Length: 68
Image (tube, rainbow, N blue to C red):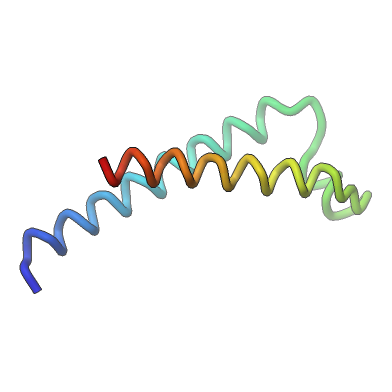
């Protein structure tokens, strides 16, 4: 395998995961309630569905940016 390709894959992977982490933390902080409490203790399915949808949307956007 070409070292340049491997290096690019590692750099874009780290960049994508970092951006995903920052976006996830911002999303949790911007909600007026505790996401952990709503999902774990209250078993709120709607919050889980919305959180999953946001995660998939962020992953799609980051993948598009990384792909070019």
